[in-house]
Image (tube, rainbow over the protein chains, first blue to last red):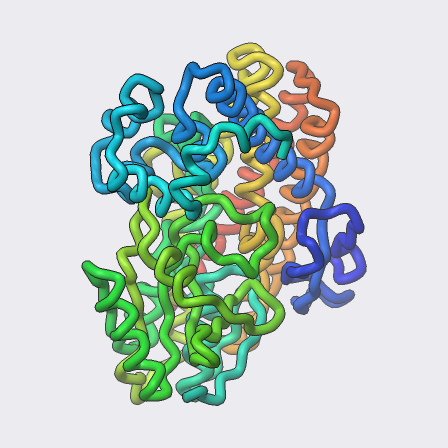
Length: 138
Length: 335
């Protein structure tokens, strides 16, 4: 890739925070460092990955509102986590976390356990248990 | 206390941290040199290991390997520590900062709030350097950022003690003894030898240049095997592995070509520069592959014809890399 071929696509997901470093060649073939603000194929691939995440979050949100799952499921998806990761933070096993995503077991959770979940998702217990929040589009 | 620390942006986090740490200790290694000496380049495709249901394709060696090999080959002694509690980890970090010693550490990208939201997935092997503390916030030199930034105590604790695979467990490292005498030339040849050997002669078809050919073969079947939606998703994942932040373009091929360019100056071996040019061309082909794959992802239509065209592009790259690294292997064997 030549120095002047380094892509500078305006449409990117960098929020102006990062301009990636690329290695590109000058006319003799020696390498130079060049910054790039974005490249379309990369942006497309990233958008696609986030779309999958957002779809899952939305699906979980609907389930929670319908009462088919506990808010824990929603926040697991929202934080792009898996049951086993959450289990690591909460200090339990992933099947247990899986049970807690069901309303039946979720209703029986102690304040202490809820606090652990809230800490994991970086919210307060009130926010965790408040299903009304999810009904408003985010 | 803050130390005088010069931050330089780099493409890849691990080689960038090495470069920045070594500069602080008075030894100048450009990022490509660190990457090449640590044998950072590789290719592997593991269809049976899946992340979020997508097979793992990697254009690099596994995390931590570059640092290990670099310190072996240059002769730097590195002190590595891991901790069982966040308190112990942060106290140890504070002590090092008070001494004026910058510390490299493993973190999870998810909790680094100075990065754009789009990059913040749970990737637990990101390397950063913490080099000071100001108003209760830690000063951070993240190699992929243009400038230094800062992070709060809480976020840094979370980033250092993230769960999942692999767990950073507060791992931190810093050089304790610098090499007396060492030969840059020798270290570079050692790096080249390992990379070229691994790229060409591992007798399993999943690794090295052969791995790319194998992936091409599998790629052809994706539309029939997976259906439209998943085939496009898997292809998108491949683009991300190849082009996302930290790769320097074309799945680390351009960083490595830059290393060969530098190595040819150091070792005065003209042929290395020639091979660097060839690797640049092969990397350009990989960029083309990503470009066309990106178009497929944008249109969301996968058909067997476009996928076999994409596979042909990968096969071409595989053939080129096989040739380049075979030549490199012969060169490095003689040294």
